[in-house]
Image (cartoon, rainbow, N blue to C red):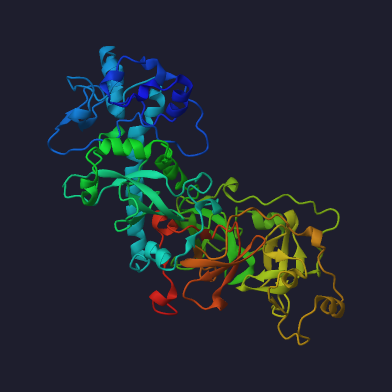
Length: 587
């Protein structure tokens, strides 16, 4: 029988430091007196940043085959296969439970029963267990409420099947770690192929909910193609699942919660000893961190709340801002209703980290145009959004060489994001902000000037497009084509903004051409669409909307909060627009 308790002490400490199966000692009876229980009570080693490694001293496997009969541990309340229980009396699931019981600390026993795990000195950590279950249930409830709210406002599209789309086009989804602003974006870690999870087993004739282990075969954003353990190279039962839903668990979850692991019916005949099979397969494999679902839950809480007031760009006159009120928050995206909107339909969608929104008073403080609202009565419960909720811009030194009115540059046209245009600095504001006008198409009153911060990744030095082989849109009505900056500046008697004043940081973003993602159509920002990265120039991404003509493409920064991984809409309860070919064209 396996003598897993006899590992030398330092090795044992490393494997145990994850506390995944604390107290579920190996079930072999001859190990009972070989080590004292102090072993498992070593100080918890710091958990490394990588994923937990599965140890094989776990009572992972409980299989209700009807013959063996089930038993309930008198110490921790775990239900499992009677034969796998410890000692001849089968009263306890493991050595630790038997010992803890005989030391007969009533309090410890009650605590353990609450947590579904035998008590150790680590009990503090374990108290998370029931809380996690509650959080998961609450998150699900919230999502269902949100979905109901959504379905009233948007005509639901039949759920788009990302998995089938990814497989049929043999595409790659951009990894979650490319999107720092999304749930789990900063703590996704090395989640990837080969990582094991516990999920519902749908290949069974049992009426009760049973589970089985699956491994990640392929990853696309939040979604994973999973294969049940034991199917080996047979992909016939592979299925896609969002890894952040409450029904996906780390290995060891079933054991801690007394849930049965049952092999899928189609492969039940392959092995007679499934427990040995699992121990062999899982030892040394990786699984989700034990606090994964807690982290997911925490990362879908957003600081912006309904009825908070903000300043946001006026979508009808880009040169000015107006006050708007947060009406809805979904996945960190805000539906803002302009303060003077009578019926609440005059709205604007943006992400809470968007550069287009600011705290109340921002416009006045930097000298930006602002439209006052004539609202006589404030709605009950309104409050100004706290300034610390907004994205901070870098401090800049405007004292020496700086942007000056009349200087020329290249800029993404805010009214046509597929074009980079010849542009002019029209006004220098405080705190590094600038008003920019697109040459050849400006209104006389400057109502279509647009505010960009000097560090914005959407403005470029003269010559940027030529160097990077991008088509530069010349000023409307300019006839001397092809456009040459040197000649144009001379004719206009203007200077170009010095190259050194532009933001040259290029983060190691991880995007590659061809990657799939979910992207906001910034021309219609309530829509999130199936999209592809088609070009990458330093930090600038060319986003193509699948099924649409290239003229609808948009230039977007790699750190834009309007880009999301595959599966984001499903996770947050937002409506995803499928590729145009699948819906009515132009809808």
